[in-house]
Length: 349
Ligand code: HPA
Ligand code: ZN
Image (cartoon, rainbow, N blue to C red):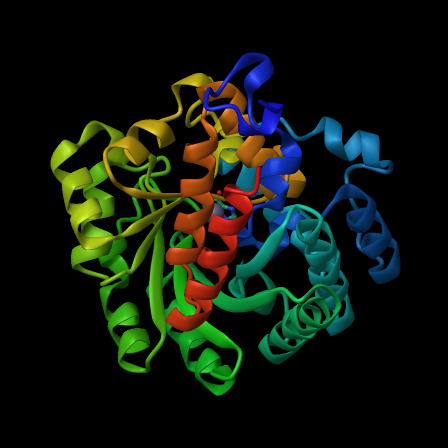
């Protein structure tokens, strides 16, 4: 029996990185601004005359230790200041697609935070043109399909979110959905009920971060009040069996991000991460990278870190990859093609 065909999930029989890389999969929870590697941060800082608190990539990386979500967000919003022109957003996006192509991603659904740019005077249209340009470049170069999802910053005024929605409606050709991110505690999903209602009425797909630092009630509220079709993170579902049954019954995916949860002290010990328990409870769990430049790994590394910490089997990894395709916004026919390819790869040896 080869190492890759081992049924067990740990020790020398663990599924290999090559096996996981070869599985067709989708990344469904990725903040494009969170792919800003220190090298690009410094280069764009120089290009745009933006002063930074670090002057070498090593110095920047040395700052990447976080007490919690807010601690990270402070640095993340400091970093985005180097993104000024359309080309900056295009370069950022192209670099991410080059990187995630090497991890075996076939489809990506990318978040962006327009408020973090528009409030600095960067035109909304430039942000969208740059990211969409990079996504199209990546599609040509690597054959990776994509969707773009605009996130509202939940710790900023609802009226500002409504303004972003107005702007987004002129870019319906590239913006497919809306999400909700930034500081979660004290900012319940229901605050954005009206914004989401308008977004859904305009045909946009709804997702929201919930249950990262916040309670399971925020997950239920995002489902019932915002009408989301996926929950980003959803870690807090682990303590709530009734909620898990609801998620499983409705086929609501959780876009989980193990390295993010470790870095932000949501689950400091990855061997206690709830993703395997939720998977076993029938929830549509997926693995994603969130803000990989800051949290120590891209898509494949998140699969591998979870595999190592939780002893995931080959069957678990195949299921996680399949879930990522199923939970994507791709047309059903394309999902079926990719799932069929996944089954062929998974049973190859
Ligand atoms: N959580 C909430 N908001 C975010 C994150 C995150 O991990 N990354 C970027 N915005
Ligand atoms: Zn996120």
